Image (tube, rainbow over all chains, first blue to last red; front, side, top):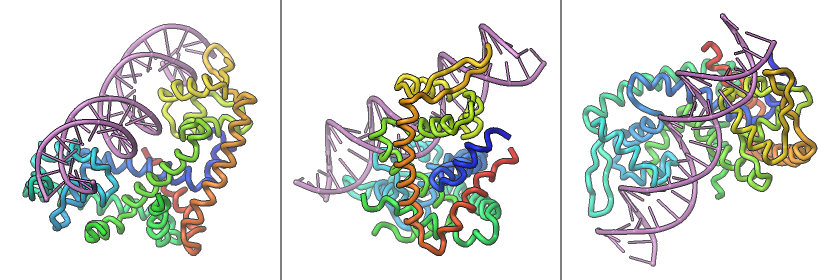
Length: 146
Length: 146
DNA sequence: TATTGTTATACTCTATAACTATA
DNA sequence: TATAGTTATAGAGTATAACAATA
């Protein structure tokens, strides 16, 4: 064991634990997505675009907190894989349509998500489990007053 | 409101919420550290190095899950600010010593941390609050079997 | 032979500024 | 005039591979 003193001090900081937990979780999730040729951010976009409602690039970005300027490269990647296509709504707005291939990929991804989320919840001791989602949901708006 | 359907689906995924919560939290914390001229990773290293026990670069990295190869640049930054100094223990290992200036900076940072963590906890509804740290601490070891 | 510190490099996610064309 | 999509660019955190020097 290395430096129990420092680790003990860190283990009392919710912010630090939140960062570490998210980092560990994302690394694991990214690994599970590798066989599907999807990065986390790509799946996030595909997931939202595939909910059935017709959405533009900006709307998707606003939903998942991805800046407008970071969407094109993400969408390019998905488009090059044939998972989405861009369909102009007018001269300015562009709808992001999930293709059949994209829907198939998304179905496979949903299975990965389901298993991943189940494993994640199982990691949390039962008596704390039901509190995780509401607590995280609250923390999400920590900065909404910006 | 934008796409309640997609947001509702995402709001049920603990993994997604964990990622978002951590992202929001880190952005806020990084902002609060700006006046101290410290990035989150730099403070993490300084914090651990300043716990009193003499630690090498590798030991600090292992404690806070920063890869050995990413330590030198971090330490260079802290050293250039005069917050730490490197003190060879033998021909190979190097102790990271927090200087007086580093201790002063660390004291200021501890106050920022304290306020930040308090604000963060206050964001979580009272009935979920006590469950946050144990839940996150458990999630931290999600991947310990690697 | 294994470990420590290091360099180089690359990837992911995120952020800002500025441009264009359209509403 | 404000908005949508885009481009370019930069920062921050993280990851791997490889090397020299040393235990």
